[in-house]
Length: 303
Image (cartoon, rainbow, N blue to C red; front, top):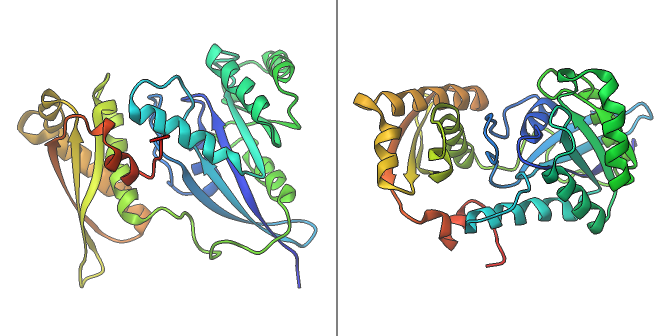
């Protein structure tokens, strides 16, 4: 009987380093929402990957995408940062993702110093390496290793896929022997209802500018399986301020229709079946300070 391996690899770093893009590239599926804006990911997302190794063993890699680590202000922010650190607490290996183009920023330095303080097996993953000249990478690697003596260093482009297969193979080989924790055909432990809400929120981040997306939360209110194999989904977008509601709806409902179309396409691809998506927009002032709302997102601040 062949040996099985199983373990957790936490993807951590400052906002906008490409953590969710890396998870999706490794998984080969849209598991974590992505946008050019920082702080898009709000809770930990688990990706489940299977890998056959050259020694004949088979590994189940449990990749944990975490929120970007930043200086929190709101209660939601504090809960997001707490979720990031808890996601890496019990991991077999922590992948510290750094945007190679941005370099060693104060934010990156702060996260690196805290990772060193907390300990564990730490690997450095330089992302977006296709965007800078190769000769600039070695000084950056040296500077980061002065802060934290990383056990290994990888250079990848999550958006293009460069170096990603090598990274996944090394992670799988380093996991401890043990039984699989999830069925082999699972991709994530997130329920479909939560994925639907997240895909709607992603479209808000992609289509609405400035601060409005940060004042928005989404919730799947209804999920009905239809006899023809399709699904009817009702998602509500809650806004923190009344003025944001008209922005999200748009002139003649144009914006909310565009958000619905984009999210429906993504959800149908993920579920591999037709989706009938209906979106409502409602006021919910102060939702980002509500204990119940944070817990519904799977977030636990030191409440």
